[in-house]
Length: 313
Image (cartoon, rainbow, N blue to C red):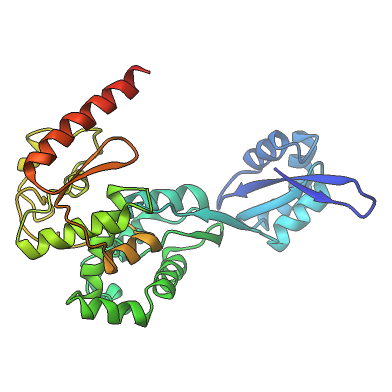
């Protein structure tokens, strides 16, 4: 619902409705009546058919006054005076989640979306050397017209990504012997590990040290990425899944990103904090960091107690 001020100091209410391609006049009438835009479904259907407006209506997202005359509503539908929809891609969303979100919000065809997202020829046009667009559809709020197709929206997300991952960040990645793809992959791990911005450079530092030492990263989110649906806690058998994304079995970074990282995670991946830590364990929204395995085992018990206390409260 929207409120717009009038010149006399009063305000007018508005509502948004989505009109899909092939939608019947009865379905439209039900939507408009439920949104309190029209007073009569019967008169809307009758007027639309008698005026043959039902054959000229264009699909889209419309913002209309509450209430509006039937004639003014149909005029807007025929002229296609649509409005954009505000769509927010949250930080840490996966390709799968983004595809579903776009389908629900603006009607993007998921088949076309995923076909392009895994088309290496298409991906290389953006100078990205990856098997998918995982990690490159930047999390931000966009205004997108209802009914937009994947070829219209994907470049917008990638352009936004490169507006953040500038040449200066590319140079920084090169200084660290990282490709663009490796930097984004590490940033995605950091993104999934914590939503606490102050912790991101510390977690990045832990992973950088582990990579240099040839240690397993043991990043739970990379295993979660392999599951059909994430679990609150991984099972023993999950850690035995044979996949290069399983950082409990395979050393180094996984083959690609596991989500779309935000700016702070990207910066953390490129500017890790130098600490003595090699381990960390979640105690809820934050982590306990440790220098060695002995400290880590103590921290795990402490974190377990903290989580159990929170569960009891």
